[in-house]
Image (cartoon, rainbow, N blue to C red; front, side):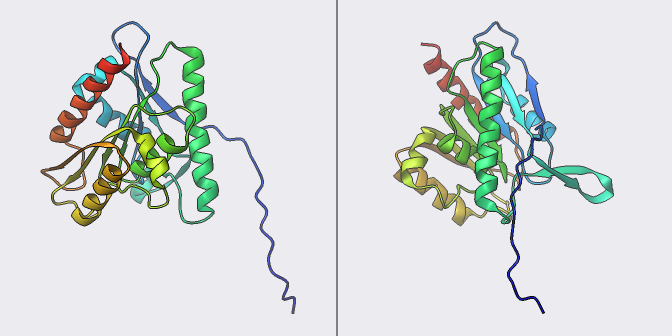
Length: 225
């Protein structure tokens, strides 16, 4: 019997990510609102959430799709950002992926930087990691229905600058206890936090869009100076 341990090889490959864009009505330079969908969704789901924000009409909307698609029930396709398998590698790959998206947009269009990031459910962790670890910087984050990663230290969290952090009152996936803990962590890091509970379950609704609207207006006023 051969008792030698298995060896694991990590082989780099080049793949292409899928990203949706929606151009604003006005002329450039444009502020950038970059969104990340939840588990089992596609980029269209987060784009619908971004377009529900009134102020977003003035922003270049970017909905980034996770790199790992899979089949859901009835052959519907969804995607996931990562699993616990090779977690640290996946985090680095995802942050690099978003950096590449924003770098390409910067080359092709006149943009106001830094961007605002918006995430729902599993996408909130992507928001926090991209804002904290990516090259683009961050003018603010919009988080709903998902937690702030425990592994990000205070020195990284403070890079989020300002945040809207929300949950549905009847959300069984993102508890009130976790929400309060996340809000306090961000405040302790010096982030300007707007925290709110809205009616509903695990969903993005008009009440949350209104809070996001206020943030975008405030950020655009600052970027336009």
